[in-house]
Image (cartoon, rainbow, N blue to C red):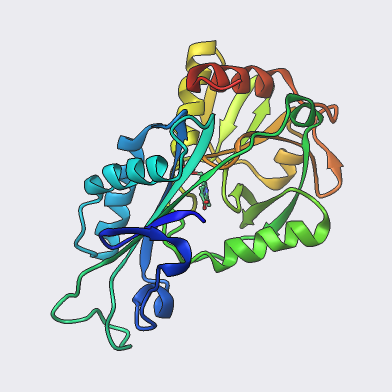
Length: 282
Ligand code: PDD
C-alpha cells in the first residue's frame, strides 16, 4: 500500500479522505506539479517550485510551495523509492474546503495539499528505438495552458483518443499550429534545427523542455523557439515529445504519416543519450 501525504499527514492511500466540498473536487480549483527523482534525488525542484508558485499566484491561492520539497522527499523515503532509478512525485494544492459558491471563500480557507510518489519503469532502449505513433487533435483547452491547473479534462480526453486509436500520444493543434502533447511538450527537427513552440499562454512551460534546450546547446544543436504548422510538422525530419513522465519520446508516425524516414533520428537519439547521462540514467 503506498503512503500518501494529505495536509500535514503521511498515511496509507486508502485512509486518505478529502471532504466532498473540497474545491478541487467541485471546481478543479487547484495547481499540481510532477517532479522526477533520479535515485531518490529530486531533479530541478527549483524550476518546478517556481512554476507552481506562478500557478498558485495566478489562481490567487495563498500557499508557498517551497515547503513541498520536504513533503516530496518524505514521500520518496516512506515509499522506499530513495534507491529507485526513476520516480515521480506528484503534489497538488487546492483552494480548500468550503460550501459551493463560484467565488472564492471569504474569508479564505486553508488549502488542501495532497501528494504521492510512484516508481517509473523506463522503456527498454530496444523499444524506444522503434519510435512511437501519435495522432493530432484540435486543442479545445482554455487559453491558459501555461497554468498547471488540475483541470485536465481536455488532456484526459486527448489521451483517451490516443488509446482509442491504438497509438501512444496525442498532439494538440490550435489554429493550424502543432503545439504540444496531452502531457508533454513537442519538438521537431527541420534541416538540423531543433524547433519547439515558443513559450506562450497556449503551452505549458515544461521544465523538461528547458532541459532539452540546454542539452541541445551543449551538443551544438541549433535551437529555434517558433511556431510551426501541422503541415510543416508532417514534413519534419524528426519529432519527439518531452516531459517529466515522457522524458524524450520519439514520434515516428503522426496521423498515419511517416515522419522523416520513419526511424528515430540522430538528434532525438543524441538528446536522449545526453538526457540519460545527465540524470544518471541508462
Ligand atoms: N505533464 N505540457 C503539458 C500539457 C503537460 O501536462 C506537461 C507535464 C508538459 C511537460 O512539462 P514538464 O517537462 O515540466 O513535466 C507539457 C505532467 C507530467 C502530468 O500531467 O502528469
